[in-house]
Image (cartoon, rainbow, N blue to C red):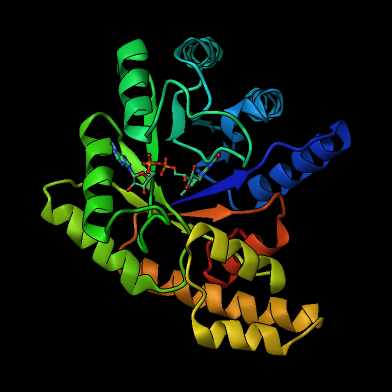
Length: 277
Ligand code: FAD
């Protein structure tokens, strides 16, 4: 079972230096299979994503840049692909992205399947392509069935594996994997894991991205008020239990949405006896 860690690109050089120390902490304790670096839709973090990818790759670790296609032209995507190829990057996370409100048109790509096809047409089998999966359905899905069909389509046009949106209900994940498999598709579907370190922020973010926080978790978190120590202790227990169930069921990997922090993920992976000490 592989562990991978997601970072977002820091906005400042200080932030980049801090992230480098965090990466070193991860390497020392966990030795993840790869790091991934997010990419703001419409190219809004392009320079930061490239800089962060170069830093991680330069240090000798496997890194998978995210590439979200809305608002981007084919020419720009082709440029990024050849840049990554020249650097020797072999893995990438291909996404549609969400246009920030008020920011223009979708442009030349409308859905992630078009990006996957384009990457394959430009670079054949060079990249291992990961795509996004939504065990609780994407917020704009026409129906859960259609959402799974579109996911399957992304695999049929060339994705090698997938990372899910985070979830706290593992039945949704198990069912999603079963339904994909029933459609004859058998790629690894790695579980996206969000460590719980805050209450209001998690609840707001989960509402926006369509991840359900179970009522009992929501109520407990709210009952702690500003007591961040209790929130973190409770969150650690909930997410450790979730990971234990996933590992027991044979999940192919856990992808941690680290939010550029080391401690919450390292505490969970230590509980799971996945760290070195
Ligand atoms: P798609 O697969 O295109 O799906 C989007 C919606 O369209 C779904 O409702 C689906 O049912 C529907 N659909 C799919 N294909 C078709 C089709 N051919 N015709 C009609 N409808 C279709 N966002 C960023 O901006 N940057 C990031 O770095 C980033 N990283 C992420 C990493 C992971 C692991 C995950 C799970 C999400 C990430 N996101 C990121 C968020 C993601 O961009 C959004 O969730 C976005 O709304 C959907 O992206 P997608 O690639 O899943 O899109």
